[in-house]
Length: 93
Image 1 (cartoon, rainbow, N blue to C red):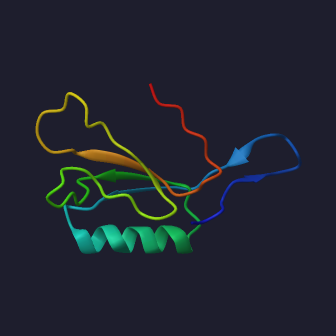
Image 2 (tube, helix red, strand yellow; image 1 turned 120 degrees about the horizontal axis):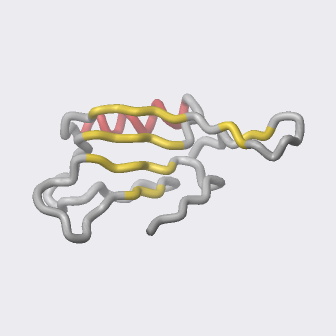
């Protein structure tokens, strides 16, 4: 997807663009978020109430990495983090 990692003046610091959205369990709004994130060169989406469908987890989209807790959870997933930039490294524990 979007390439929004950049360094300025070779300082070694990266600039990331984030978006936060409550999708209200809507499949259409989920698709719109991904389209707008690509247009806006967003690196990370912080998502509340994502659309899960009948599989109880957010489906994987091409070019995206979805981070969600599915181990030892009770009830539906309330939040996910979507990494839209393949240059972003994420460490999970």
